Structures are given as C-alpha cells and as structure tokens.
Length: 125
Image (cartoon, rainbow, N blue to C red):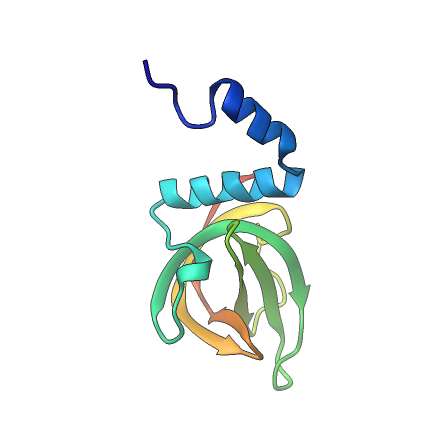
C-alpha cells in the first residue's frame, strides 16, 4: 500500500528537520499550484502572468510625484512587487493577506514588478 507524500515516518522526519520558513514556503507553493497560478520564480519578463501568494509588505511610495501603493507578494518560490499607481490605499491589501494577481511582468532594479495588476483577494493566512 503506497503512502501519500509527506505521510508516515519519512514525512514526519522531514517536517521535524525543516524550518518553519521552509514549511511555510512549501505550503504556499502547494496553494499556488492548486489555484492554477504560475510560480513567481518561473515568470518571464514582458510576459503576462497569473500569480498567487501572500502579501509580505505593503508600503506607500511616491513615483514621479504621484502616490503608488506597493505590495510584495511571496508564493514560496520568489517575490514580485505589485504596484498600483495613483493609489494611496486599497481596502483588503494588507500584510498577511492572500491574493491572486494578473498582469505584465517587468524587471525594475533586478526585481520582478507588475504595475496595476488585476487582483482577487483570498482568505488571510
């Protein structure tokens, strides 16, 4: 009889040896896959992507004299910055919140960024 991955003695020992951050990252990767989203690590520049994960930080940073709300989305594989230009606040966009987002991925200062993404709020973690 085959056991499900992560069950039994082998799974118990792996979970025991894993750090909390590693376990959270693995759980986020599973959730991302279940939602049909592309892992952020696999997102290519100048391509549309559907990503999902948990917001780590949310900050207000002016860009070109206009407000911009920036949020760092983490999915267990990598991070992408979501930037809403002209916005100071968006209800529900807060650290710890799960969401899925879609938009054109670009690189800015070596980091992945999606400007004005479409998004859907999910349950919080």
